[in-house]
Length: 62
Image 1 (cartoon, rainbow, N blue to C red):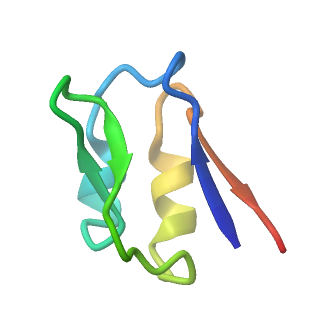
Image 2 (image 1 turned 90 degrees about the vertical axis):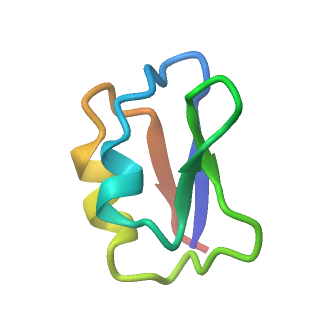
């Protein structure tokens, strides 16, 4: 699975980082970012995508 973040939609709510802290963090501007070396198969990734209030996270099945 591949994870993409629409940075034009992201408002920095932080729900993704709360749901999957091993995958998501915030960049220097306070918006969502993927951690280096993240595991896209982390079981909490789907929950993080669902928790995003503006649906800025898209999961792409490979």
